[in-house]
Image (tube, rainbow, N blue to C red; front, side, top):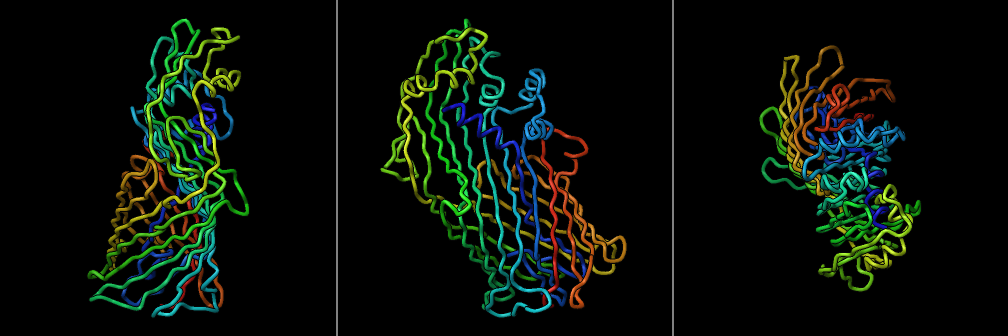
Length: 446
């Protein structure tokens, strides 16, 4: 059970994807995505009508390792030892993947109003997750305990959360103003497709130097649902934001996706935690005794963690006093807080710049600061280049290109291609992730 809890969590997690939620300024028009701000000067407003994003992030696990796990490539013991040497005492990684399409406004037919109105309706799926883990936990569950005979490995505290949802999002323009501030909101109805969460506290494993016994200790629990196309829960989330003009730019503040999800049919395994009935939240944590398990029918060569739990599962689970149950309950959705400042310039090849600070309430995510400049080298081709620090990884060099492509009803569609973590594709390291996003925009109003 412990093998499936940790090894399964980590190997599954290595295919990580994430989304960028920035609005790109392009001089004579503005790209608006969901609750992103709109400048007050006369301009065309481009709204996203479809898009897909996939990016990864970690502060310690290089993409080379993740790619081999994804493709099933062989990782030699020496390579795995090298990967482990790159880890910090505590490590993190995370992802968000979003694929969406706008069903309102309808290009060429409908246009949002300026007063109280539903500005946009978007449907899509989003999958996100985060993980914080120790170096010792990585070593035990990827290298086994054979390299650590006679050692006590303090796997310690580890956290994992993964959530996949199908959603319909209503972006709403609010009619009231305060001085120069404009206000907007959104409401999101979600359907939970699957949910996975795991937690360990003071977990350790000690293997005898003669490889004839192991000692296990610490508390843990795991909660998971199987993927259900029809849904295994529902949620209600909301957002609120404000923006105001500042000279030739504007400032925006927003909190999105704040709310709760009701999740059903959650399978739970736990040790050292008490629960109130089938409630999904633990009531309290209590101390449990360490367990010493002797080898049964295994040679010294076979005394690896995987073999212990594959061949002695019933014995191990019985000795560890693992409790199992089915749960349901409410969990806080991963919400996003964002502060951004956009500045526009006129009469220059450099058309503006943006500074932003955002936070996602997700395991493994730290506040992310980003900045970028926008410029137009030729015609209607607009480029954005910038850097970011924090988030799921350490730093990224980012770039995007926007260009006109095709027309409908006399209006021109806009394509935006975004690359995050370009340096990770050119010079892979353990400091950053990488990914790509593609969006299609259409002008409404203005």
